[in-house]
Length: 308
Image 1 (tube, rainbow, N blue to C red):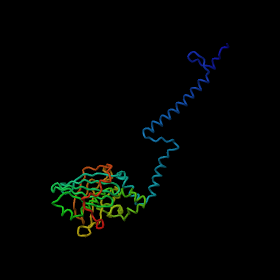
Image 2: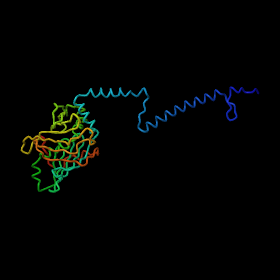
Image 3: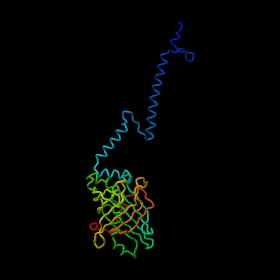
Image 4: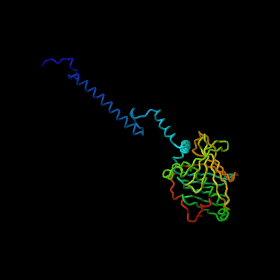
């Protein structure tokens, strides 16, 4: 046998192998390794929740920012205000909440507030000194009152104003819930909210939003132009004799860097005079509260919505 030409072969494990086969195998191995490595990286990244985009698929950062700016600028002034409000508070991510606190000058009375989007509310107030518990609520169509005391039954039932004020208190998230409501989506935002002329409230320039439609009362919400948080709300309600009263709620001021999404304290004013101070020690969001929680109890009193 003729001697193999050494320049055409490589000796591997004592056997001659053509060089072109060796080089071809190495190239194929490298290509296969790159392909498998890319697949593995994509699988691992997606399993961790990351989205992997090819360079041509990923828009430049400046283009993404421009797209967001165009979308924002396309909104109405009211929509831009609400977007800024929920950007600061993140309250549009809340579907329901439970708040526990106290009220009164010496915080001697207890209050538990429950709410469910877009317009269901329930408030339970406890008077330890009197030994009574009062509950009031709104299920989206009916406003009701219930209490378990006997000694002060006539006195409490005669004063329905605090039940109406309770609706103003309970609807802490009324702006974002109105903005995201089905009514606003189907009928338009102007079916539930309206942007009014700006006002100065206690030295702060505020945007004023009128809310209506979802609740049987019309409220005016004062949004700080600097922090985009609600500082004040007001409404006109009738007392037991049918007289019209100006009821306001002053929220504890929160700066733009505050970690709490909403104020944990507020003062209630009637015709400009302080009536009560409410402080919440705990607020729990997204508790999956059932709608039946807000249904009117059989032994409750129905409040006439026509005289709110």
